[in-house]
Amino acid sequence: MKRCFPVFAALATFIFSACASSNKTAANNDADLFRTWQLIELDGQAIDTTKLNRPAQLTFEQAEQRVFGSAGCNSMTGKYTLEAPDKLSFSPMAATKMACPDMSVEMKFQEIIGKVNTWSVAEGFLILSQDDTPLAKFAAK
Image (cartoon, helix red, strand yellow):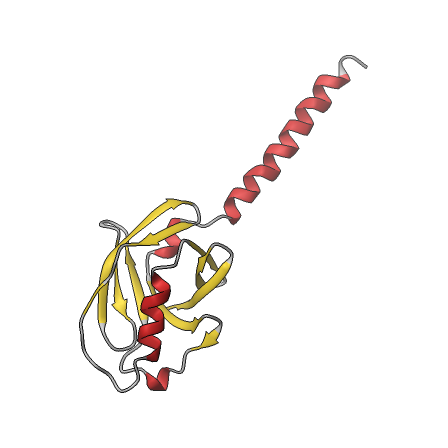
């Protein structure tokens, strides 16, 4: 019996370490973020793209940690910071100052971007959230 205990202990350690490593693969992979994402929802509301002058989208550039895109009317650019597997923050964004017929998506998007502190990618969608509250949903482009 004394010889069986080390075998069982080693087997249990192997099983638990295998389970722990499988959880890590479910976490965010930074590489998933580095592409162009098209905005499809803000605060749980679908985006009416017919009201936009151009697609509302963000492109994450890895080398210089820059983000750029459009909020539907104006071009925008800024920096982002990835701090942990799911922590994301944006610097204040610089944007052009054009006026468009409907600025509602633009204004809401600019308000929300400053609140973002977490992100996740699942099934081709990027979710930007404040803690556990989804703020914006993007589709991979």
